[in-house]
Image 1: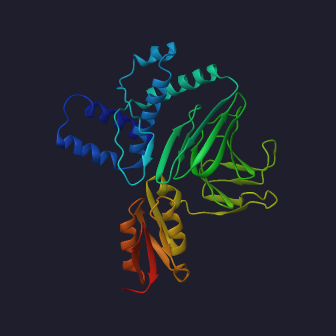
Image 2: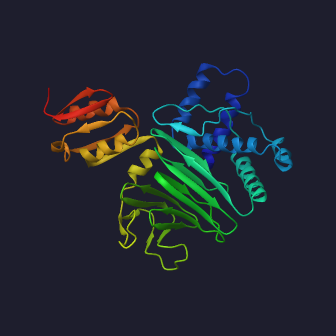
Image 3: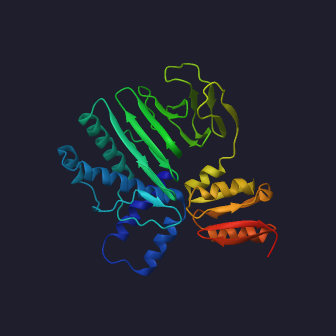
Length: 332
């Protein structure tokens, strides 16, 4: 599916950036782009690759390959996706070219700084960020997230300081990929997993492959080993409490990766907490409403549609108060 999206994206790029584009072509392009998150990601990955190319354009090896590639420069690469808003894309190159370039770029970065690469990535409330890491791995940051990468010859370490991120890891047996969150190491060789750092708790969920939960980077026997469909939660600051492992519904993670909120019989209190992570416009409720159950799928950022659905389905009323919305029992 990924290869198909990348091939189609390359074809669409040529259509959208070669000569005049009529309205019918624009419409079909929009329909294709919105058809799946894979299509959207194909564009974003190209933007990341081309932005990295511009940063390294003075390198002779980059210039050698750059002159062979069908692309246009852009001034605003659009790394950050503002949730609830549309993304515009201004270029695309084929997948094979992206992969080749990223390998070259990573090699040059290590040549320039062989012992250490450090970068900080962050998002504000209501933003998502797709970051292609120096080794070709990928991190997708959710709203209000900050992480720092620490790469060297023998290690790949990510410090998750706040928020939530999904990682797609390129295999490298000589350099383990560790995410440090709270008091533990989350180790992967080649996998896709999500880490959610909350006030008192860290939750690790595995979408593909396998990860291990360790107390230290030198530990050989993991506290927990997770496979797809499993998650482990542990206290953020108390390392003495063992992780709790259980089966999990990955729909919440897949939903936010697609710009949505998905609730399956969630208590209203939890629904409100999840909504409020993504916006400055908060929903406030009285304690008597905490346990009302909610199900549905909503686009992130569309607060008014969520409120309309809640007041239609539940015995509650909504009232604007300053920039916030107050939910109270009963109909008005």
